[in-house]
Image 1 (cartoon, rainbow, N blue to C red):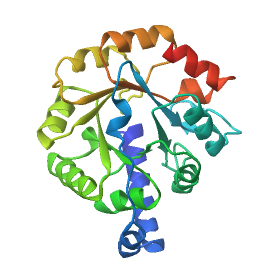
Image 2: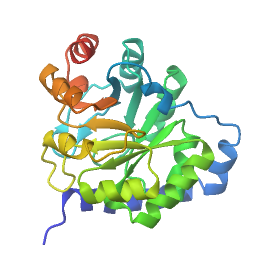
Image 3: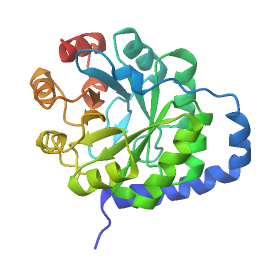
Length: 258
């Protein structure tokens, strides 16, 4: 049986992480973050109205290259200047053409919270995230055991990092809540098939306790999609492709958030 897209991504990521450990050992990472104080990612979603997490993403496994001439830092600055509450930065190298260097460069230029979006499954990557300027990290419930998720949440919180825990179905959500996740991202994209169904947010939102911050992600391209998310009473949306491919990014943000 051929491996799924997700299985291929994870296999490549494990090789990448082992290579990075040789270049930058965990002890060096710990020294680099001794004085690091992450921004308050959760506070970005307080107040009235749906907030925007705008994503810097050059490519995707399903669509290929989205923006050949992407300038990650310039795009991130545009996001920050036009009302984004936070910025998500893809750092996966092989399939999304991101990098940790890109995350660090953006950190130097913007003063709103940054989410490192990647396939994180071990302690090293958590320290790495802080060392390169992340304020929050993505943890995907479907690729972690309950024990792994609990451990990574604890390590992250001890470092002052926030965790956005991604779920796609009821089992993922149960695992996330049991582990103590407080920020839940409902991904409308099935990571095995990469098909999108925005009804996933509607279905799962009603199962999440009110004290949790809830984010709707994937498949959000226009005003109608935003109306669906608003009806689901999410606190924020994470939008990547629609912004990265927009001819006029400020106008697209205004359209989505109006």
